[in-house]
Length: 128
Image (cartoon, rainbow, N blue to C red; front, side, top):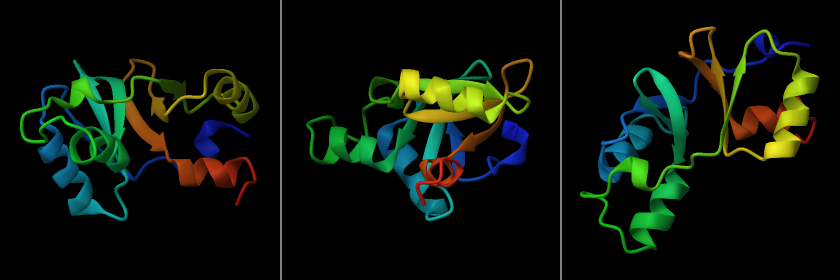
């Protein structure tokens, strides 16, 4: 099975590294529950991922001001980029090795094609 055989085209929005945490939280919440994450994009390429709990940990429970904190300062940089032609068994091995916070599907030029959500991943590996 290839990455192209699984669902990965929804559940996210894209944001810029300089976007403020409060604005990113609003973007996620505007599309919730369909949208669960923001992929941080710099020069057309994914560089990080942010879930609502990332913002809550940093700005609600933590001490960073949501209206002033750049999302690049709190994003999870541990992402795995895969193409839709990669074999899922290889992707499973990479996930087990690197334990990324997000799995982002890219095209040959590095542009985002989609995002494999934690919920989708659980289905793929048979946990749900």
